[in-house]
Each structure stands twice: as C-alpha cells, then as structure tokens.
Length: 224
Image 1: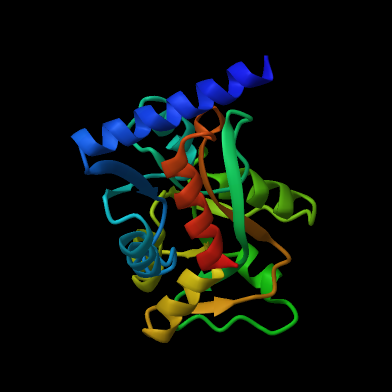
Image 2: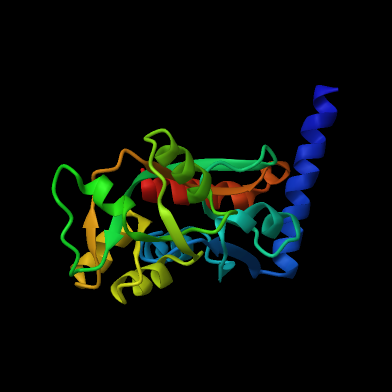
C-alpha cells in the first residue's frame, strides 16, 4: 500500500511536469481586499518573479465578505482577507491591525472623554457582511455605546473621502488611517481596544497544489 502511494505521487509529479512543458505559463489570480501597498504587493511580485518565473499573476479587487464565494466559483485562486472565514479555507494569519477612529480635521475631541464625544457624532459604518461589522458592534455594545450610523460603506478609501468631507467619523485599520492622516485628509484617535486580523488563504482541498504551497510560503516570508 505504501509503495502504491509513492508510485502515485511520482506519477502526479510527472503529470505536473508534463503540463508545465506543454503550457509554461501558469495563471494565478490573487484577490486584494485592500490597498496593494498595505498588502506588500510589490514584494510579492518581486519574489514571485524570482522563484516562480512561469507563473503569470493576475490581481483582482475583492471584498473580505465575498472571499469564500470568490474562491469557490474560481474568480480567484487565493487572496487576502480580514477576519475568520469558514473551515474550507486554509488561512495563513499575516498580522493584526488596530482599529482607530478617523474624523474630520476641524473636530476637536477632548482627550479622556473622546469616546463619549464621538458617540454624539454621525458615523459612517461598514456594511453588514464586512468582518469589521460584528466586531465593532460587539465592541461598542460591551461599553454601552451606540454610534449614530448614517451611512454604510464598504470601501476604506471612500470612507476616508467621506470623513474628509465632514460627513461623519468612522473606523479604519490603523495603517490606512495613518496614511490618510499623513496626507492631512483626516485626523485619527487610537483610544480603542479593537483589532482585526489579516489573512492570506486558499481552499483546503488545494493544499497539495505546489503553486499554492509556494505562493503561501512566499507570502508568509514577506510578512514574517
């Protein structure tokens, strides 16, 4: 039985080699759930070109709430996403981001009472399918706080634009918020004890696929 497994493995390897010989370009679609600079796409492209020169990368904008569906319908081969996903996904945790409040530059929240100040302001909230949504709702509920939500938006940079236009305040992952603050588009308050995890993942039933294994290893190396 063990010999049959070894022979079958060798035959599988031979088939992969034959496939590569016939079609040297392997197309691989990666879903990006946020800004490419934040996801270190430049480093990913450089390492992929070095280690897997026959793989043709395609980057597609995706949303974390649609990640499982995009994987199962083959829209993407792998990708980045926020928060936990269902058990069919092999998830590689990359980092944890703090969540911060972003608000218009002309607001003046008091230091210690900032959270109470923001509760009296209008909020631009994430859509219900977003991983931020439940975590944020639970966080504020545990503090008897009830943000006054006036808009629901699922794009981080659109949220930044709306905050800049004085529509209201919102929550963003700290790296995105810091970039917008550096550009003087918004101000930020980091007094929350709220975080979100960033993952890279692909289907568990594809874990033996050598391309996904190597790309997963490359992404882990970039973030380690």
